[in-house]
Length: 257
Ligand SMILES: Nc1ncnc2c1ncn2[C@@H]1O[C@H](COP(=O)(O)OP(=O)(O)O)[C@@H](O)[C@H]1O
Ligand SMILES: [Mg+2]
Image (cartoon, rainbow, N blue to C red; front, top):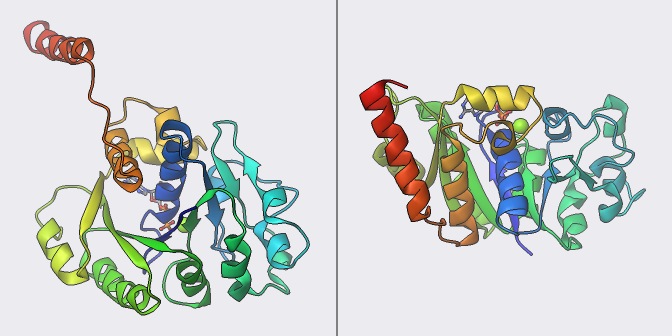
C-alpha cells in the first residue's frame, strides 16, 4: 500500500483541491483503492470541501485510541473515500499527532495525506507518516522557496520525492517558469494545473471536478497526474472520438457553433 503526502509550505496553495481530485480519480478511474486522510487537524478542510459535516468517527478518535482506522473512513456519494478530521475545536484536546505514522501503518487502502502547511508538528507528522511526497506550489517565489525547504526535510526523513505540481498557472510573464521552479526547488515538475474557475465552482458544489464538469479544461491535467502516479499510460482516445472532436472544431470554424 502506498502512502503519499501532499505537501506545501504555505496554505491556500491547492493541497486539499489536489487531494480530493487525485483521490477521486485514483479510486474511481484508475482502480487504485484510495482513501484521502485529513492530516490538517487544526484547520481541517477535506470534509467541509466535500459537504460531509457530521461524521460519527474522525481521525481524532483514531489518534485517541477511541476508534479503529477503518471505522472512521466514510464514503462520499461520488465514491471517494475519506478519513475526516473533526471540525469541533474541543476534539483537538488530548491528541498526539506524533501517533499518526503508527496509526496509518495498519491501512489496507492506499492513502493520500492532505497535510497542514509548513514544517510545524502537523506538517512534519504527515511527511513522517508518508512514504512518498508530492509537493504543490504556485508559480511565485515565496511558495517555491518553501518547497525547497520542505524538500530538504523530506530527504532527511528518507522519503521518496515524487515531484512537484505547479498549481494555479495563469500563464503570465511575471510567473516563474518551469525551469526556474525546478532549479529553485531541486525537484522535478510532474504536473501542472492551470487556474480554472471550474475548480472553484466544483469545490463550492462539494464535488470533484470530474463529477462537477467533465468538460472543464483542467480535468486532463488532474488525469495525467493521476496516470503518472499510478504509472499507467493515459488511454488514447478512439479514432471515432478523435474524428468527432476534429469535426466539432471544424464546425465551430466554418459555421461558428
Ligand atoms: N487551479 C486552481 N484554479 C482555481 N482555483 C483553485 C485552483 N487550485 C485551488 N483553487 C482554489 O484555491 C483555494 C485554496 O485551495 P486549497 O486546496 O484549499 O489549498 P490548501 O489546501 O493548500 O490550503 C480553494 O478554495 C480552491 O477553490
Ligand atoms: Mg488544505
